[in-house]
Image 1 (cartoon, one colour):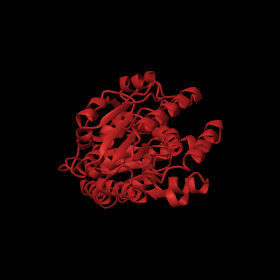
Image 2 (cartoon, one colour):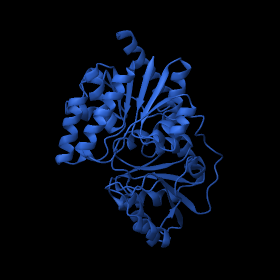
Image 3 (cartoon, one colour):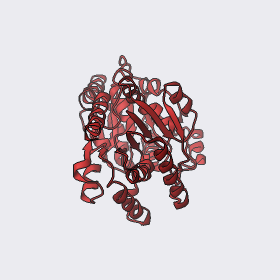
Image 4 (cartoon, helix red, strand yellow):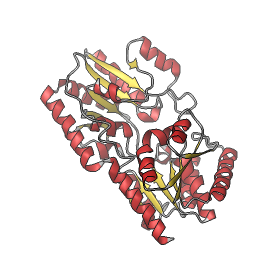
Length: 370
């Protein structure tokens, strides 16, 4: 089969979908990747993918650019005539699904997370709901990464019940993210891994850090992740510089391999406002690290309170600080137990092969239907 995979970045395909791509290739499928060109596009081509560049403003809501994206995807699909198209992330899901539907090409969508657009009632959320309602009439299968997102789409009648299904996020490669021998740091080390935008709870994390420092808690507080100055909810670079200069946090920059940083931490923190299934928490749990995360969709699927970490209230720096303080007070045996429980949880619920198998079954179902 000729299979097209459409995302908002080549980076995303290479970092989160390559094991899936390789499995498809091993079955003899021809893989076409459709995404904006970036520094990772060459790796997709080297891996045997046939790449098609597309212009996509993944953050903005410019109707002219979005219409141009729809037309561009429509023309690519019409020329390529793939047997099935796999859409990930918001704009491919919306405009790609619509283009595929109008051409009669079977498509599968993956709702990787809703962000904050569905938490607000404004013109942007109204437009997003309308676009989903129109475009999601077409995919043969729509995968959601947590049951709350699925329930929301069904309740708002944005997706047909017969098409909706669950997958455990992108899954995690259990052989790539493995626990290391436990060694507690002399200074307890917290690590937040995320893009530097407010939706990830970066401001609450920094506020919690300030509260802990004022209480005399001796620990290291780190942030690893990309600056995103073009994002409308970006953390200002001046703020980040001030936090680093004042010693509030250590900013570690970015990396292509987070394992070293995870292993060198004692606890992973993610105070996000809402997630699909957060990849960083899967990586942390698979690596045997305790976690503190917000009690919101996506995060609470990965973290079971008092089992493999703690859940805290969303947008509540005081509660986050309390949970972080409690984490520093735990003995080594308890920290090890939390980490081992997290590893057990991802082994049973989030193995990447579970996701790949679900996709194989969906693709096979489309093949039989045709």
